[in-house]
Amino acid sequence: MKITLRQKLLSDGRKTLILDFYDRGRRWNETLGLYIEPEKPKTDRVKQYQLNKINAEIQKRNNETLVIAQAKLSERHSNILRGENNIPIKKQANLDFIEFAKSQVENKSKNTNRSYSFIIQSLVDFGGRVIPFNKITKSFILKYLDFLKEKQFQDNSRHYYVAFLKRILQIAKRKKLITSSIFDELEPN
Image (cartoon, rainbow, N blue to C red):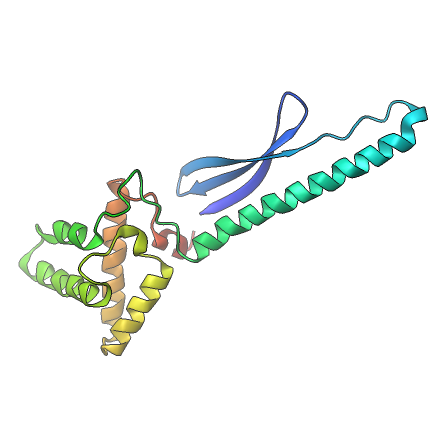
């Protein structure tokens, strides 16, 4: 996911600050409600000292506004790094990942279904019977990997289990149950 800060010129001469988001072909923006004021034009030499003083104050306020905007941008970036980007759409934040995963493996072959059932059971053992989609973050996955390592799963098995998580999250994203998956940020572009 890419987030940029941009300025948009308004009809009154001010500039509004906007965060632009881009994630795998999907774009949206968030208006911060912060504005950059234009400097006063230097037209009259008699008022030059006063204009310089006013413009210095305006520039100071604009710099403070830009610092606030940069802080908000950094906050959004840190949310992504912490894995808090599985933003569910509408009110489906409490949709259970385990039940969704079970529904996705029902029509698989007998061997695949059995393999996936072991993975789902390991998730239940790790996170409980109900795991909401918004709980599956980067830290959740890292703790899950540690859990599997403690249970003495081999590297290939741990990779297979995480690949299953990724697959189910991709299906949920395709069905628009979540807007993005933590794995979107972990993959190279």
